[in-house]
Image 1 (tube, one colour):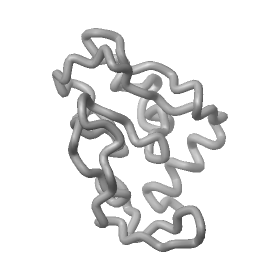
Image 2 (spheres, one colour):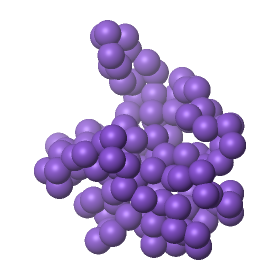
Image 3 (cartoon, one colour):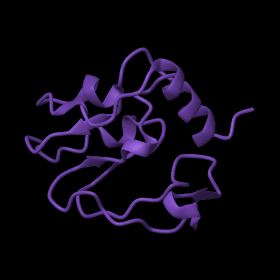
Image 4 (cartoon, one colour):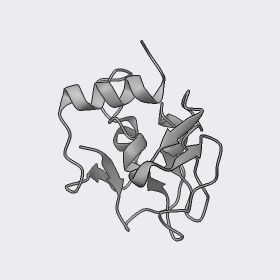
Length: 116
């Protein structure tokens, strides 16, 4: 599963630099597929191809957020999600809407970083 940031976030920003996939963004900030990854373009739902550097709509305007499709729970990088490890208010928690196996998370990591 991916990690999510709850509305208890105090916007301290401790989590953002810890993410190896650059899946965490400040509230109101646009995100990109390519940021922190090797993705040059992504085919999204409906077959539309989006450039990796194309700005995407922020998921939250109020507090830091995690792009679920870029979150691998730090699988393949660290033994535990680093955002949760550094969060001073424990608001980086499992996202019940995104359940993934270890194998799926590792496959996502390989895709994000274009590993063979």
